[in-house]
Length: 275
Image 1 (cartoon, rainbow, N blue to C red):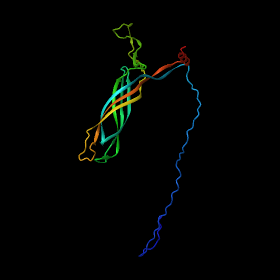
Image 2: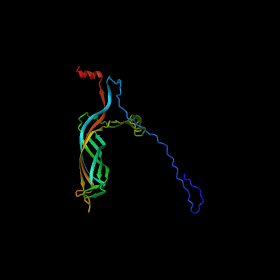
Image 3: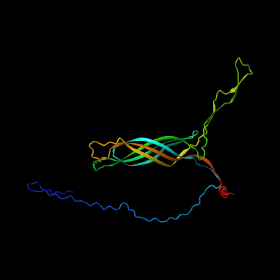
Image 4: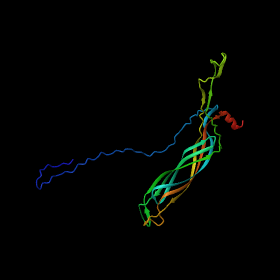
């Protein structure tokens, strides 16, 4: 608080003002504290594994094929501003579709390459150099292709189609019309009903797993220009377009869930010893 001395204003009378009294805040205790510790050896005891030893039929992913696909990509990237130099480009491969079209053995692949481009800009310059900020731009470069598949693993299960069958029942009906005799009868199927058997088979769709990728890239700056009356060093030019060419090598597996017979343990041991 400010304390003021109540003095009636008179000529040559000064009103005294006292400084504000400051209250010291309470001392803050430590919020967190972490002490260095040492790593010691942890003991463990093996636990018996319970498993089926008499043989079983299991449903597991079976490898149909393993292949390396080459994908050629050419694209043009527009930067949001003028740049003088590319500092770094980081790439990650993303696959959004890997579909085996059965009965044709064609693999449809779709995806994109995520590219993070770091480039240098100019804020000030002279004939000896320039200074600026390092900016970045992230783009997705799409690609799409099809490739034939050679099944160097197991063969895929045959596709079973949906079936639909109609059936009817026999019907005997008297003919009570002038042109038919009393003993005449109509022998035919029953037109008063509709019967059908519909069968659906839910096939296992093959799927893919990525193993590795390798990208060989060539990037070239387009339409490099040097501004008039520029103070940049003689070899520096601005650009805002990049033409890129990439060759992508993708190694992947094509799998399908299938039922596999696992023999009994004693049968496996006999096979190993040649008995």
